Image 1 (tube, rainbow, N blue to C red):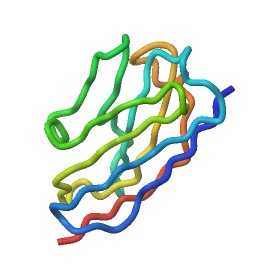
Image 2 (image 1 turned 30 degrees about the vertical axis):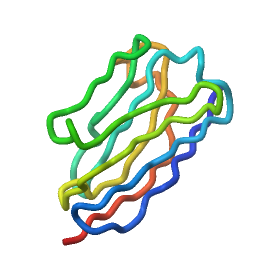
Image 3 (image 1 turned 135 degrees about the vertical axis):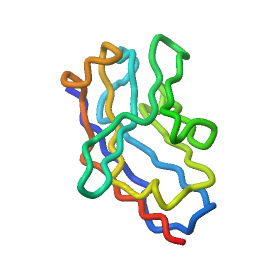
Image 4 (image 1 turned 90 degrees about the horizontal axis):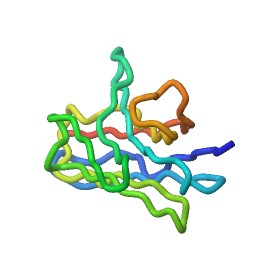
Length: 119
């Protein structure tokens, strides 16, 4: 069992950067896939970035070129570096990790951290 806890959310202005961190209570080394999802008010929770199969990265078009997902298997941490933030990036952000890329229902999930981007 792995418990994930996100941190680093907050209020920033458009154009600024923010790094989200996700601390795991256990080792994440056996978990092939790590991912970040976000849920805006009134919207569904969507995948925005992930790593799997070693170094295969996946980003949705809305964040491609601005966000970078990474993992540290020694520190058991997952990160999301977010640059050039936009108002539409405002959402609750969730980290997740699992054994199989795409099998999100079986992933370990964090409780989320709120990111608000103002103009």
